[in-house]
Image (cartoon, rainbow, N blue to C red):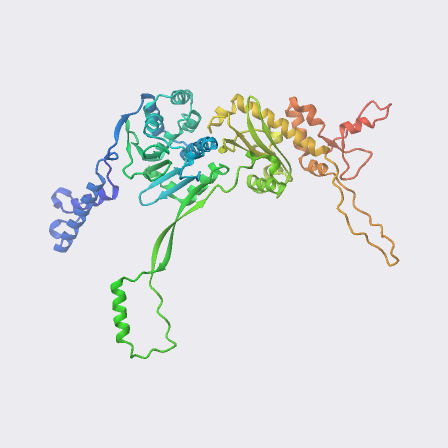
Length: 567
């Protein structure tokens, strides 16, 4: 692979053409060689030599790792790589999602096996992920301390074994009108999305019992290379993936961009994900031994010289030092995977603030936390907000963003799936399923049978939650100290009429429930029981009654119910 730096080519071209006689170049604005002074000629020659040396250095052909062997890609894998490499107008950010997901799987596998075999953890007991960026080398590295791979695993998993996922991915792309590479994670071949942003990919990996090996491949190459890692054992155990980024992928060297992506795709991954931050600090410059000796001699010669007490001490000379520090990004734990008996109300409210981002009130009105088990397994926390979300207040149902985040094994898949009907669009929360494929293609998953089953259960649970709110007991009054007059008699204080919390909430969200009675015929009967109405028997601002209560108190002779609409 031969690459030439644009600046080097430009410098060499300018230097070369400046030395060509004007009879060859014509009137193109370059000085004639005879019109240049000797110093100018020498400067041009030096510039040309430097540019040529840079071109030669940049043009050095690619050489695989020392001691490695070459293996051809399996035909289907190579075909898939061609599709990925030539993909346009796709979301390239997904490569980081796929790598975090793979690392999380490797860590989960080791954690599971270590339950019965603690010795598998070896000397590397911390289960974690680390992300590093190097602006000078233009590399991005993702490292984990998971189960790791030996030489055979690297060869089989990353290129030679024809897997059904590869074939199915190609078929899905062929059937897709948009050629959407974002589907790559659905078929277990998400690793290859790294070539969306990288010219070269290196994978170092080691199991507890194997020698550390390295896998490497160029973007567009028909083969890959595997061999012992020349660096030796640098991992202890786990996998390290280094992406040598393309020229148009510099954005992934930005710590702000990386922090945003890591937080987005691993916000509630159970294993810690850290980003190495590069900081430059100023420290006093160290004085070399020779300078110290000179200073001692100068001090000895100047012992007889009087120095004023007011003379300020000389400030030390400072120098810049580059430091490296890891910052834990996914600090919010996945509380939906914990036992709900161990979670306090304060923790639920803190998690509400994380997912609501302030849209829906500072506190949640109520929530439900449950595990659905059966043919489809998933964990969920659903929240009912206290306040109406901003978009719903303005009546812009089309602009209402989905309030539910969809996870697969605690890895964020999307926050754009319509897991709730529009009349329940104010419900916020998370859904985490182990049965779903890792796929962000909205159209594909929206039609999935698994999603339809999950959606049906979520709607039922949301309605049950609101029903529970409507049937809750009236909160007890907080005890107050009685007031007495001068004679010691208790002063009767008129207290404001108590309002049931559900009525307060219903006055804000009642229209959404009425919309549900129209839109959702399957749950119409359940939703009707949640509606509240004004009655001529009580005209207070907060006096509401359910339809069932109204019917129960009807006189025997009353056969009709009269309704007055209010515009």
